[in-house]
Length: 352
Image (cartoon, rainbow, N blue to C red):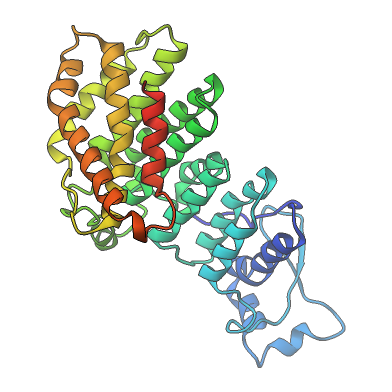
């Protein structure tokens, strides 16, 4: 899908304004030009037509804005895509800065630039750290325009971590829990959206889905930890602000999905890899928390609740315990507490 040329309002810093303006003028605008217009911009023999007394201007379809064409050298005038993206993430501080993210990614996609899965994960992670996860969620909702696709477990798990982090940062306030549960449910809906499945090529998905082994088990739609984390958020909403009742049956519905998907759970921790232990603790701590909250909401008469407690909880507890032990054994070489440890401690405190 070809999007309109993005426009950006004033941000919190001149450096960010300059970066956005450079991308808009030197990368995004040329992607909207017709072939003869691109020849004027890029071909050395034709560029003299742009430096005369009379400027050459164009107006894009659907816009009244007039653009003056200028000569460009693709090697020196176009900013490096990845370096520019990382600089953008460093410069975005305020809400109005993060509001530029969807438009920036739309421009990147229209210009044919590629963003790797690891950078999608970084975008989501940085948005969550800045308390602006909603901006990344909006990019995912516009997947056909931004390219932020929920087709790999790594990307979806970053969103799950982000919604858990936002809840914790809100001190489990009603507004914070409601927003996190809404985002979590929206993520599950988008995972099922065919638009996300069709964004990336199958061979790229196979490569990116092997983080925990089998590519099929890497399918986000088959991951019980993703559904289990959202179940925990919905159960928290019912427990803290819904009189402890599953009024809309959502906790029960998600519990059934977790049980049905449990056969796909990857629960083995690499004993020799501290980074994998941290990854597993970050992945499964929300499920460990969610089962404890959900079983209280569901009660003893719920078959799904009993299966969560009888089959799933013991296995999750073992993964969480072993991951923490591995991390503890590597304390001398870890300069700070890992995000898995921080997440676990916050959830353990909330579950008491």
